[in-house]
Length: 424
Image (cartoon, rainbow, N blue to C red; front, top):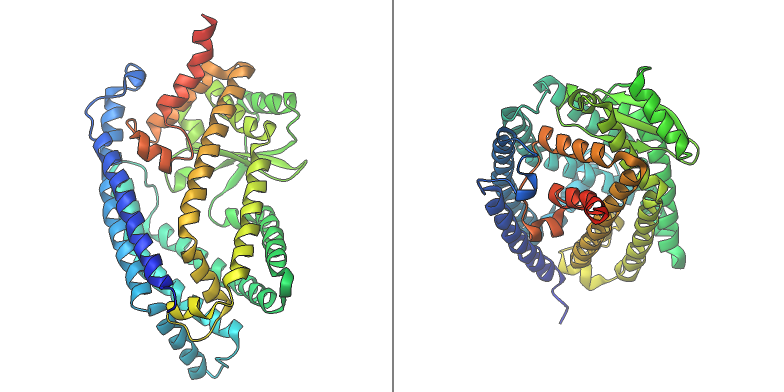
């Protein structure tokens, strides 16, 4: 008797849904607490706390509904064999338009086109509500309806432009890969990731946001001086018009080798009136670079990708696996989708492990900025970001340990303050 792979996958998905809902309920209870954590008393104003609490609770209620609908749809799609049904329908569509349904590339692209349409239909109501109700209610949304749908259209066009050649290449590699298939697939994805990391900030990101050089002045001088002191190869320093879509703020860096760039959200500059707070945030980001966190993360992703493709090569010819999900044939893309579902338990464990490492990196980057003399400014900057983004002030320890890639503010402030206490 063949192993019931599909039933096991659906069962685990539902089990994880109940587990994560339990964590969500714990976090929801923490969000309802009427007072700030003791560490934040006198640091965060009561007005900001009340606004943060209302915003977080709204997002929490929304998340309960969204996750419930998602598990219902995903379970029904697998349990009622809608994937094989849709695969056959996409083949019939090819015949209807005069194309060969036996051509796996054409068949796969037709299937993906239908999946994209379905995803847009099911995701759109949630995206609209999140943007124009929740985010707008709490003063974050700056988008117009026209801008929202224009961005959506641009995203679809990019998928249509970039998707077919990437999917076609993957199918050909699997068909011709032989015993070294995992290595070939990994090599292709490695090169693709490098190309996309190069092209995205230059060609794709400017389609959605405007990037302008940070004007000459004291802030620019301080950032450039900091970068020079750390031998960070800063080539360009940009401001992005994040305020056209949201009042949330952030900063990030990107680039390869000797061609690094730093991007500041205009909202960050507007919210942090003190330049030292912004420079401290940049010092934290440069800490990730100086401590090789970016490189370690990149290497970890490459190793996991190679292992994942290695696992795929072991099961891709399993007739029982495909039949369990309702497929009589073994298309490449379907094999990848099924494999992703069968390794969901491992993905959860890996995600949890990566979050642990990421949080450790955040503490190290904070300590790096502190060592450079930005401890007080970083503390003030983190508090400012927490306030202006209305981030959750109270967090459940189980929820944050499972979900958060960054430590809660309370833990970060305690870590920043700890050396001073020891010195005293």
